[in-house]
Amino acid sequence: MNKKELILSLTEGFVLSYRDPLGNDILMDQAIKRITLTSAFRKLDRIKQNGPTCLVYPGAVHTRLCHSLGVYYTGRQILLSVLENSNPEFTVSGMRSFLVACLLHDIGHFPYAHSLKELSIKEHEELAGEIILNDKELFDAVKNSGAAIEDVIAIIDDKKKATGEVEIYRHILSGALDPDKLDYLNRDAFFCGVPYGNQNNGYIISKLHILNNRIAIEHSAYASIEHILFSKYLMYKNIYWHKDVRSATCMIKKALLSAIRDNVIAVEDLYFIDDYDFDMIPQKYKEYEPLSLITAVRNNMLFERVWEREWYLDHELKELSSNIYSRFEAEDRIYKALKKRYPQLKEYEVIIDIPEPISFEADVAILEKDGSYKKFSDVTKLFTKDVEQQFASSLRYIGIYTPDYVSRDIIKEVIDGREY
Image (tube, rainbow, N blue to C red; front, side):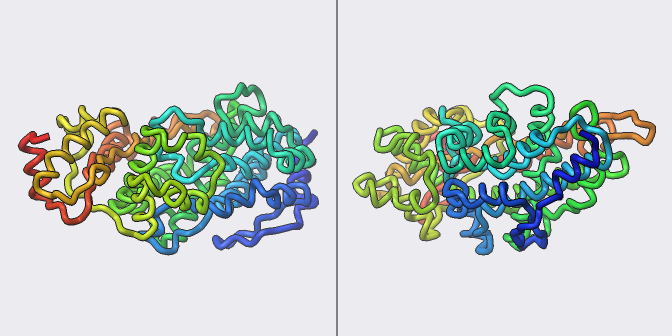
């Protein structure tokens, strides 16, 4: 099929739309629109994209559904652009599968899934495949959309085998210039009311090519990658890892890990639920007191970060907290030391917070005017290896969170005096 016919397949019949707050008309045809009307997809409208961030930035109540529509929109724009700029070996079925994968990439998400990554849980990409295969309404809608179901699943889940065209789409969906990142940076910045994440997506997308079955960007636009990486840094610093957002996240994590450790709930109980189901957990298990942390977060009664230390610095507490199980032991030891000063303190109210590793690497080819290409790392003067590491290390702190009546001076005395 020639390029003109492929482009036509992405435009003909795309007359139905959703109006996006970011100013886009998200166009789709009847078959793709049908997927957005399924119960499985509509559930995403009951899961906030940024979890507890709305406790700090009240506007951040946007959902994974509107983000998924945005990823679909951005993915379609990328397809149209690379077809104009290059000659990828695409098929109509392959492109339909990619568009559906964009739409369903978060279908397996459940609340606070990222907080439990240290456990041996199924990742949301794997759960997405299970939902697509086992939910008859969604399965039928995907099948009737012109997409190949197994290809959709393989594009979403990188643990599935992928070759040829499917591998190209997977790289587009999960690369440095992927539609997921291009959407969430702009969308999260918009709803939080901050300027940090804003990208000129139209310009970036217009400069994209397919080169050696991978996304490449023209040299004239390579600074856009630097902008994305710097935006990512600022969004983590000011939004995603704001100390109060970290407080809410670690409180939720402590509640869930405690309940899982004590066999009150199973990890599997968390799969496939939405925010409303999640908020009912404390009521369902009201006899288990650590789950009251979930209620406290919902009521914006957040703990204070009373001690912190840069992660890259050596510290005994860092070693003691190297995994979630040893972390429980370290928390218990600190709790027992603090209990002497604060008799009202409860065991589950001492929480060590360790953010996950974060990377600022970008594996993108930079296309030169003569048709040759270079690695982004060979072109950028800003995001060198040293700078990438400095960005990452400047964000990552090990912290201790407690109720606000615990004194910073007391916790410093306990930690520095090795009372724990």
